[in-house]
Image 1 (cartoon, helix red, strand yellow):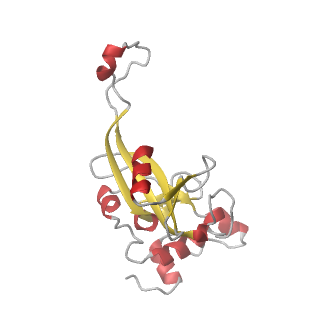
Image 2: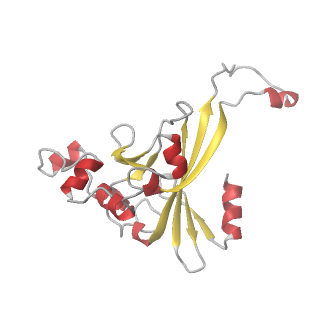
Image 3: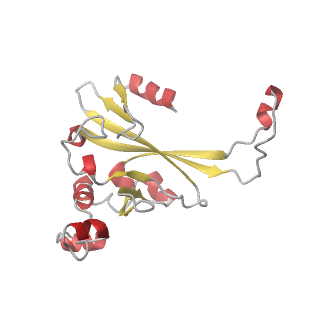
Length: 204
């Protein structure tokens, strides 16, 4: 994967900077000849069926995402990035039983079953494949679309509204716990329909 990304950077005369830590955003920063910064974050997940995946998490909606001058857990402050892209790696889990105790020789390499197969790759701007709900569990991460056609075509719920609406939605999004900490009975909104009403924005 990384040799392909390096080839892309070289062909476009981009400087390529890897994140200093595993939990830092983004995985790769491209710096163009005119000093624009482009974020590329790598995500992987498995297919549930031919039409849907388990879903990605598209990064935090707290921390550096809200405080865009912050240098914590991010290569450069969020506000310095011109674009934010996701490289999604989608695979099918191997259904055949794999004997983990079996010993193979070099001659058997072609017979060894991989735990994953049938890879698909998608590249989209983050806002185009984001949904209006957090990712799995109680983590404060942005969830992704799960339909394959939405991921391939970049037609998630924010795609027609634009990145500014996406940013405002997630910068101000609250979990129930966050709302209670702010002395609110409930979050101001919990989905895009309620947000548009809350902000008095017509759904485009």
